[in-house]
Length: 162
Image (cartoon, rainbow, N blue to C red):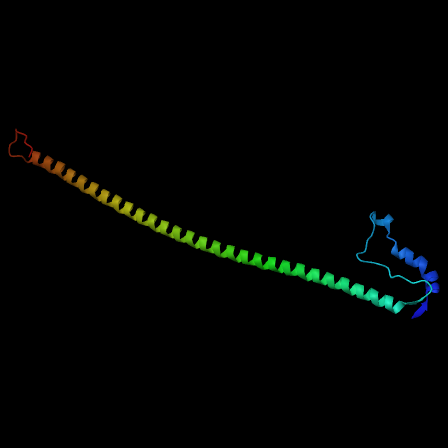
């Protein structure tokens, strides 16, 4: 649609200035749109609103494309970080599993050594008990035999010990 510049300036001037001015009262800091340059409207010439609309659409498309690129770059970085994190977790799991396996092997070996040691001590204690029992038996049999010899001795008045 082509209209004269005079009619569009009279109708759109108050609305355009209100929309372009930043609203400083509400936010406290000025609102700045990046790369926003209002199209120049020549005085006294015909204004092509389709051209203005097309330029605005191109600018919006450029903004969207840059936002999309930034988004996908950050997503790619996050994806790489996630992959690295998963690799670290898996590596740590395998290291822990290896450590636990080694620890369990050491514990088994220690248990076996303790069992062998306990068995040896038990056998030694048994052997000592048997030796002590044999000594007691031999000592008691010697004392008992000696007592009997004294009683049965052919020399009644003479005590002799063999």
